[in-house]
Image (tube, rainbow, N blue to C red; front, side, top):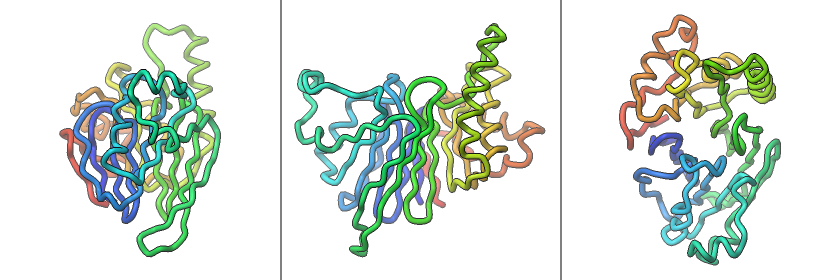
Length: 247
């Protein structure tokens, strides 16, 4: 696998015969092999996770499918007003929370396979994605995170904590080859809580921080924590946009 950090929560994952592109809204998208099937995921409609420019990719990659959270659902008139090509409409699949779909795919060896997409419910908007293909399982949190803040009420804290843990506990003990997880500096000393809980609840081989607003210092800060010792070696050292990782 080749993983590229694009910007914010956007990453591409290149496998032998498919490419996954997550939550693009800004930055330089790598060039992909046009013979590969491209899957473009948008976890929700917030401007830092979704942009209409993704639909221009159909002009370069004819074998493309869009997996969009249902909160992004667009009417035909909206698409027409925003000059989204008709060729895109048949390539969009809307997926809601706690759903599973399987899509057939013919691989480079002309063997019939399928890609499975599962979702969890976000604690903000939209969904988190679990993508399974052949032997690989990839998790992208979107905005599913333990969004707790200084100054919130006890009720707000308890509600968020319950919702977050209920979702992550659905995948308790599950193996993920890679996981893309929020590490948001705006939460101050609580920035790592959601990341930490996910890593200690699941069996994740390698984790990529995201949603850190280009403050790369938060990554070594996390890895230096006493409580992160058991998984610090699994956390990617992202230092710039466009950085690639081979796994």
